[in-house]
Amino acid sequence: MKPPAPGIHYNIPEAEYRAWDAVNVSSLIEIARSPAHYKWLIDNGRKDTPAFFQGRAFHTLMLYGREAYDRDFPKDIKPPPYTPKNWREVVEGQYKSIFACPEHRTVKALTLGKPEVCVVAVDPETGILCKGRLDRYIKLTNTITDPKTCQDARPIPFGWDVRKFHYHTKAAFYRHLVETITGKDTTFIWVAVEKAPPYGAWAHLQGKMPYLDHMDKQDQNGPDDVPRVLPMLRLLKKCRETNNWPCYPDKVSKIG
Image (tube, rainbow, N blue to C red; front, side):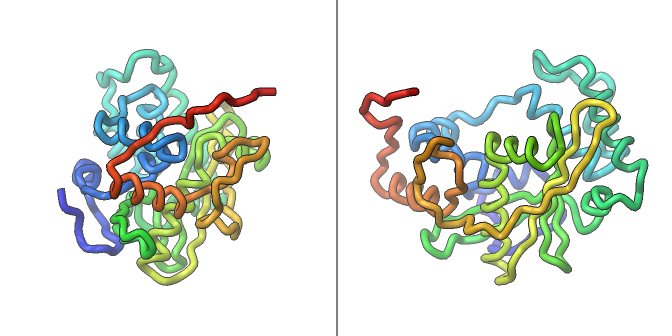
């Protein structure tokens, strides 16, 4: 489906957004692994998993409230195989814990602005049409808020999750799209919510790092240590132009 004109769009159903023919960050991240992995994902789609299922339930309850949660996740819903039996207890426990303190900063971060806001933008350098779905967007301050579940919401442990699950790259991509449209700097806030009682929560601000144009820095932390939004878009453009989607390099690597 052809997406709407570049801009920020509200009240777009998720199914319609997913049908838009544009690059999203969840698929783009795969090209950092290899172009072949990206192409396979685009051609075959992504399977639902217990983590995705429980994440959707968490986001629905946090962003839209009880009515939407009860509608989309009724008691007779069948989750994917191997989903923890207590998934509903965890999700509802997280919700009750956070919203028990209305004046807490994490609550404000999750209630200000509009939920599930869609962005369409053309990357100025590559000309690639991109799309993003922001968990929450505050237009007045150009702020993006993204709730995440975790084992430990403290800054250092959650920082490990940020790198492991590419949250920093996803944030960079969303900021790039919004800044391309608005011409203004963005603020990005993660709200980390623990998966076990007492379901502690902590809001984390992404720093003003040069998040767009890091090259393929290879160091002891691995190739995904730094966000690489523009290099990934450049690589995607090259693969599209040549219709060549290589996998891993033909070499032997030393480990240890």
